[in-house]
Amino acid sequence: MTDVARAPKRARLYVTRLDPWSVTKVAFLLSLAIGILLVVAVGVLWWVLDVTGVFLTVSATVDDVVGTAATGFNLMDYVELSRVMGVAVVVASIEIVLVSPLSTLFAILYNLPVRLTGGVEVVLSAAAPQPLP
Image 1 (cartoon, one colour):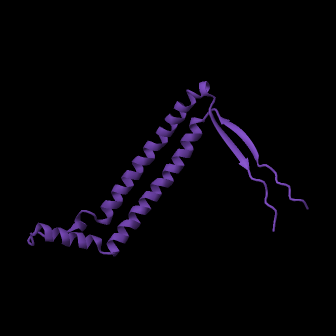
Image 2 (tube, rainbow, N blue to C red):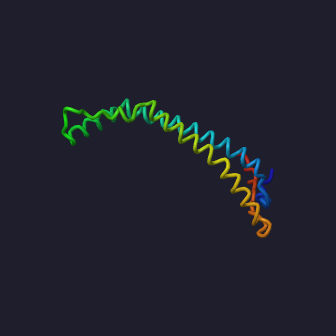
Image 3 (cartoon, rainbow, N blue to C red):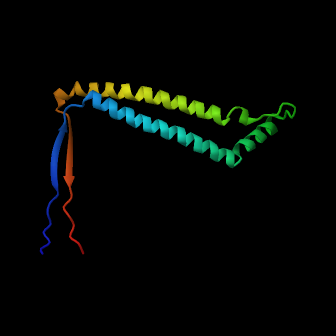
């Protein structure tokens, strides 16, 4: 067997058109995945902060700073799990609703000047196989 170093194969492609419907479908699925990830991450972060006692510590610190023992500040009244998760779901929903049409608009806006510029050049290359030791 001879070890002949072969140059990697390359292909030059030009992205001359983006199909708006395909971009919309892909953007919707990606934004849906990001929305689910956002809700799960907020839930996990809230749980970690609750388990480590951060909410109780912040409540005690605010009580010490304000100095009104009669009223007693409780941070959990403001950051209870249902309220935080509700806000996270609303933010994720807004993200999903905005990303899909905006990506479609950007695909249409990309298609307009591409006739003049020729598109974006993409160079694909495959590395030559390495011999086994």
